[in-house]
Amino acid sequence: MIPLLPCRFLAALLAAGAGSGDWPTHRADDARSGVATTSLDAPLRPTWVVRSAIPPQPAWPGPAKRDAYNKVEHLKPRLWFDRAFLVTAVAGRIFYGSSADDQLHCVDARTGRELWTFFTEAPVRFAPAHAKGRLYFGSDDGHLYCVDASDGRLVWRARPGPADARVPGNGRMMSVWPVRGGVVVRDGTVYCSAGLFPSEGGFIAAFAARSGEQLWSHRHGDIAPQGYLLASDEHLYVPTSRATPVVCDRASGKRLRTLSGASGTFALVVGDDLIHGPGKTGQLSESDGAGGDQLASFAGHNMIVTRGVSYLQTDTELSALRRERFLELTARRNEITARRTALTAELEGAKSGRSRAIHAELETIGEELVEIAEDVRGCILWKRSCDHPFDLILAGELLFAGGRDSVRAWRAKDGDEVWSAPVEGRAYGLAASRGRLFVSTDSGAIHCFESE
Image 1 (cartoon, rainbow, N blue to C red):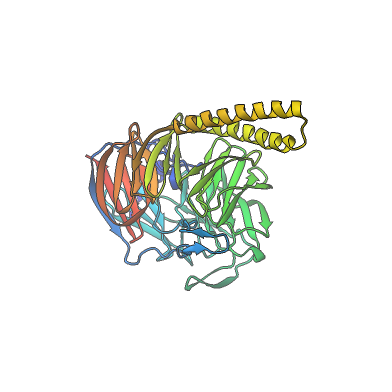
Image 2 (cartoon, one colour):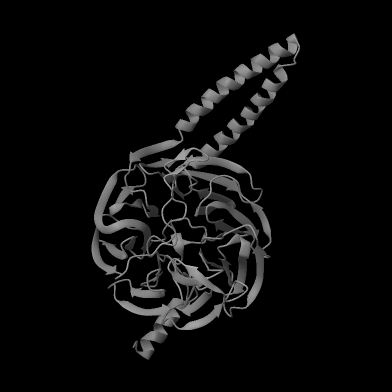
């Protein structure tokens, strides 16, 4: 039992909200940027390991080997949100949900000692979101939970779906409308999704963070919302399993559009744009959240976007690129390619004088396309071989990537490798908070490292 006075002090500290150096939600913020507010310096030393008696129990197996109908080989996994116990880290504590024991766990970030747990009635597959001393998360039991971050006490519970109906699933009993999404907490509102079977409806809903009162809810008969929700000032972005994300108005919940491009549950917000994927083959699409247009595509499955330089992760490489310049060149290439298509169509019936003018313009367009291709190659600032494809974050001047049985760090400015350490299993989840790196693996281990 935690003494009363320290508990009150801790509650006040946690209620102050996540501050600089914390990691209050999955991938650090509502945009899922993967950019930490703490700096880490290499080398780092291991300090503790938490090991689950039972490893994570993912909701979905890996992808099929091929899509025979569309003749696509070596399919990329698009539903890999629960392969490890992903953490939230605030005020010297880490919090994580478990698909193995149906609990939310709280651990001391300094020692690795478990402080409290909270039981639900089914797997908890997503990291909780922290806001003002409370934790918000969903469960396969169909409920959205709010608990006190200091002691795990239940504050309120709500059900986004229409009824408390259960069915067998993943060897367990689960709701017909499981909360298979990471929640967003913003401006006193909790946004969540529920549902798995489009025939039964997928729900996107908003609740008052303080009381749990439902503010709005919308049923959609064509989506299976799974993945971490994202938010910008005006929009809510909802990953929908192996389909492409949908965009909603954040104030009303009204569905605005379904994006085209790469499907899957990886996504991050940049302004009002959404970068999402990885599709079947490892492609990230950047879409205009306000208009829905696809702006560009990138060969990769994870990206970090910062001002001036972005970082792209593939199965075999890590690279730094000038994303803004790449978008400008892509837009220009699309513009003149469309012009070339129109001119080619016009050429068939053109008279000789007009035909000569069209040929001259087509030649100019071809030369410009060659120049653009060269400029696109120049957008890559550096590229390094990298066999750590499972996660990528940025903490200060270092990029950290998770791999099979190890985690590594590279200098962001030049891509030079500066540190590595062994871990137990595939490192699918990375988080950084207050000088510590947390590495979650598919064996059920959570490793903690600190700067020396």
